[in-house]
Length: 375
Image 1 (cartoon, helix red, strand yellow):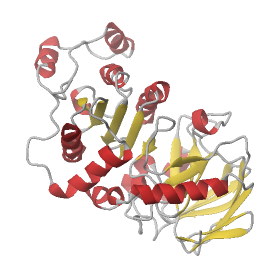
Image 2: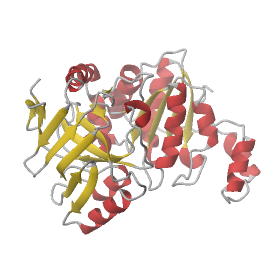
Image 3: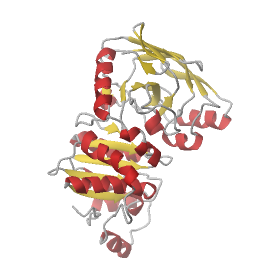
C-alpha cells in the first residue's frame, strides 16, 4: 500500500494466538479507528542531517527499485529516522507499508504481530529500524525467519540512532564491500585466527571449511540479510579458546544499560567454545551477562567469530549496532546463524562482545595491528 498504511485485515490466526496466550479480547472499535489511519513516520519536516544515511540505506545498501515493494518496521522512539527512510522510499517511487510496533502490539514484544509478518512476506525489500527491549529476540527471530524464507533483502537497524546515522551510515559502502571481499577471501583459506589486545585479550579460533564465512558489508543481497550500518565478515568457529576482554560493548539490551565498558571491562575466559569464567568490577554487568548466557544449553557457546570492516567507524560510541563494525574482532555467544553458516546447533539467544585495538593473525601472518588493517 503506497500510503504506508496499516493492513485492514485481522486474521483468524492472530485472534486465536491472542486467545491461546491469555490476552484480553480485541476492542474492535479501537481497531477500526486505528486501521483507518496510516502509520505515518513523519508529521514534521525531515531532519536534513539524516538524509545522507537514509539515502545510503535505500539506494546503495538495499538498491531499492521503483517496481519493488518494501516493508518498513519501526517504533515510536525511532520515528524520526524511519521518516527519513520513508521519504527516500517515496523518492524512489516504490510501493511500501510502514508499521510502528506500538500501534500493533504491547512492548516488549512476545511475538511479532502477524499483520506485520503477513505484509513482510509480500515484499522484496524490508527495513527493521527500532530499539531493542528485553525478551524481544524471539519476535525479531520470527521476522528474520520470514526474511530468510522469502529471501528478502533486509536491513536490520536495531538500536539505530542519530549518531549512527551521521557516522557509520555515511560510510562509502562500496569501499567497505571491497575490503570485506578481500578479507573474507583470505579468511576462507585459513584454519586458525589469533588475536591480542593491550587490555589482555589472547584468543584463538579454530575454523572449519564446513562452516561458511559470510560477508555483511552493507551491500545487502537476497542470500543474507544484513545489519546497517554494515561492515563485517563472520563465521561460526569450530572451536575457540583463550581470554577475551570486552572493553568495548556487549550486545542486545545490555548495551543500552552498560554502554562503553572501557573503564570497567568484562573479562571472559573461554575453554572449548564455552564460557569458563566471567570477571568484572561491575558486578551487575557480570551477573546480568551470566544470566543472559545461561538462558539455554547453548547460550554460553561461542556462535560467532567476526572481524569488523567499516572503516568509517573509528571509535566506540556505546552502541553495538555500530561498534561491532569497527575494524577489529568481536565474538558472540549463542545462536550461530546456523541457517547461513552451516552450524549444527542453535540457541534462543545471541549476544555480541566487542573489544578495542586488536592485533590479528591469519595462520600466523599478521593482518591487523592496533586496529588497522595491513592488507
